[in-house]
Structure formats: C-alpha cells, structure tokens
Image 1 (cartoon, one colour):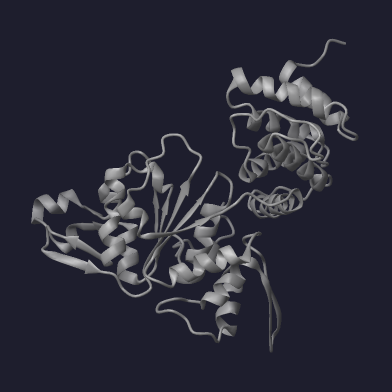
Image 2: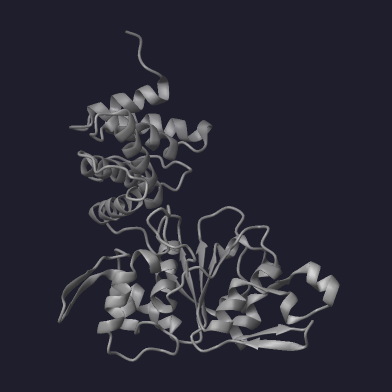
Length: 374
C-alpha cells in the first residue's frame, strides 16, 4: 500500500488508491467464497476488471471497466491465481499486460506494489533476497541483516507478487523462480532456514512476445505458469474506446483540460495504427508496407496525450490534426532509413485522397518534409 498521506498530488496513484471506493463497495457486496487471503472472490475480481453496477441499500455503485476485452480471458487469469499455478500474461506491446497485472494484484491483495521490474541487469538477489552489507559485516548473517525482495514479502504475507518483462531477465536468473513456484518455498541457506509461502501467495509475470533480446523461458519454468495470451483490440471501435478511457485517466493528474475534437483525432490515430499494423487499409482494397515499430494501443495513447498538451497549451483548446501529426510521425518512424519510406508511401497512397483528412495530410507532410515554400 502507498505510504503517502494522499493521492491528490500523486502523478499516478496505485489502483488500490484510485479505485478504493469501488474495491470497498465490491468487498461489502461480495457474498461468494473467497480463497485464503483474497480481498474479493474470483467473481468480484472479474467484475472489478470488466466493470458493472452494484445495487445495495445505499444506492447504485458503478464499477468502471479496467480491461476492455474478452471476459473469458479474465476469468481464466483469475481462476489460475486461485490455484497453485502462477500466471504469465503474454502479448505484443500495448496489449495491457502490465495494466491487467496491476489491477489483478490490487483486487486480490489490495496491494499492487510488490513488483520486480525485469531487465537485463536483474540479479538473483532481486528475485529472492539481498543483504544489508553493513549489518552483515558487523553482525554476520542474521534475519535483521536480510533485505527481502518483493517476492519474499509476498510469500510472507500471502499476497500477489508481480514480475514485469520476465523474458528481459537472463535465463540463469529466471530459474531462481523455479523452487518458489513449484515448492512455494524460498531456501535461505545462510541462516539454515526456509521461508514457506502463506496461503494466497502467487506470482503474475508479463512477457513481450515480439521483443528483441528476449530470453526464452526454460521448460522447467514455463511449466510453472499458466499462459494467457492478451490480444490486440479486435476492432477499431474497441481500440478507440480504450484509448479514450486511458487518455481521460492519465490526463486528470496532469490537469489537461477536456478538449473538443478528441474523439475524431483518436479515431484517426487508431485507424492509421491499425492499417499500418495489418498491412492493409480498412476497406481491404490497398496493401501497405508495415513499419518496424509496433504501433501499439499504448503508443496511440501517447500520441493523443501529446496532442492534448499541444492543443491545451499552444493551441485554441481544440484538438486538431496538426496536434497529432507529429506524434504519429514519431510513433511510426523508428528506423529512419526504412520507416520514412513506409510513412511517405502511406501518406501519398492513402491519406492524401481520403475524405476529411486533408488537414492531417498537410500537417504530416510538413512534419516529414518541412513547410512548403510560399
């Protein structure tokens, strides 16, 4: 749980703080069986993720959707965490893996902060435990000198631990999780003791299946996980809804005003990203080259957020095509030698003649070529 006195000035509050009222309402109305140390029943966790309404004596509480997608996938994920199997959320960038893992931990354990961020520099101590070397040298190995990892603390509390970007961690370090996940035990040979996990403990890991430098999971470790593949949004309307919701949530702490024109530009950016990702236009008539960038939903959110800031602080309060054109260029062109050609071709073959897109075409052309001579 956050130790800050309030969340009003926090840039990105933890979900257990942001949605504390919803979690409390769900817990009060939840009369279904709960696994040991779970704050909500599995059914209530799914309601928290997907949204709904609760009716009680005090009125109706609206539960905002945190994930817009397949209910069955969320049911499988939650059911997995109620067993002794860990959960691996797998998918391309921008499929809400981190978002889902964070909200699952908040709903189940009321604490999403037990996090290990996987990188190439993550060590075995980060997954298990480390030492306060000043105390270690002065006193020798002792429980007081031990520095518990987030996974260690989750085992001791019976809570959910999160491991982000598991495949970014080297294979040798990954395998430090095998004993934890299979035996639910963490040996501490320096103290000749072991930590046994309290009921309710489990691990949610996320992994990107389209990333360079990925370290494949060993067969021993992969067997300890149930894998849920999170897909990209099924259609443009769903993706636009996700972008609009996340932009609203992210824009509030930044004090960005609600601007007119946002829905139209969100739909435009989503259309561009989906067409370039799939390699074909919406109507299926024109084949396209795809850039090296992933053009994920998360990147679409970033483009719109940047456009909102431009329109709010340097424009007239209306989100216009020019406000999102430069951000779109930055998202598409990651490899200048290759992606610039792809973007130019898309502008000339698709955008230039599309009805209602003339302003975006002019702004995007100016961004990539510079303003035309008067």
